[in-house]
Length: 327
Ligand SMILES: [Cu+2]
Image 1 (tube, rainbow, N blue to C red):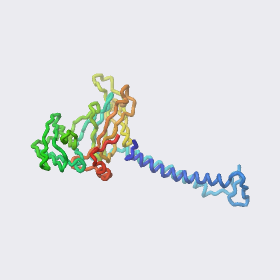
Image 2 (cartoon, rainbow, N blue to C red):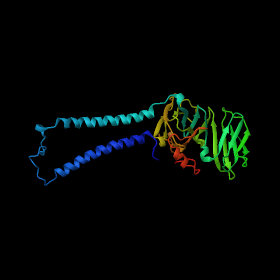
Image 3 (cartoon, helix red, strand yellow):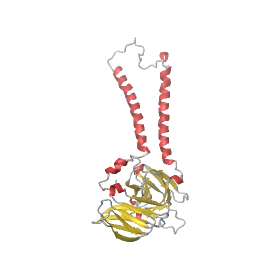
Image 4 (cartoon, protein in one colour):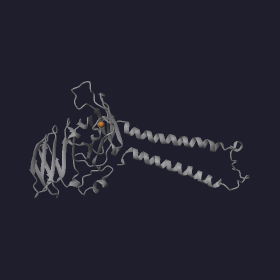
């Protein structure tokens, strides 16, 4: 998978651009010299720029040209250094905490835990699913906008309740209190039980675990700041601090170590701009089941928001029902 949305692919393009120019010039001069001074061509000794093989033209050197030989490559190297440094500052400079969406990630042998320190309410795009869920303080409204929805399963802190959706009317209202301090979700399905639409609220303190096949869920078009910790699976032995892991998001070309015993953790940041499910990998050998230490990250749109800042047309292209998903 190419990390096509990352600063690194931009950097690759810029380096390719300057490499092409340098390559064309260098090989151009080389091929010209090969042709001009090829075997069998008698040198014209009266020519001003005549080159005597094996001797440096001290008496008629060109100071301007020789300075250019130093100055131009120096400018090029400085420019490439600035390009490379600016992309790493995008990766390593952490945005202010109040402007970013923060999640804590804990690496254990051999799974990931995702701890929410900020709440998140998100919903599938109603323009694609033709279902819209609005949960006000005391009532839950499900607009079905011509979809085949017949049932809504409401999860409140693990307690599941099914509600029939009135297919004759465009909107179904359920008297149900919204409580932002507990986990709540609404899954709308059709007559065959196929999931059409998801609305989910993750309270502060909520935890997902890749050991239970749960995904890390973060909003799009926002700076995401992950604080990363490595902890032992069994914390009963104070002498054992755990092992090193590395949290790797191939899609964004971002990777950061998780260091056991480092109380403040380590930090990484990225900004997703397209809805979908992407890979999480451990990039540091951490024991026998290291290879199984995989996870997934879901990029979602916040409730009431969309994810169209950069890719509105792409989003609508996906309206065939296959909700994102790119592995
Ligand atoms: Cu690992």
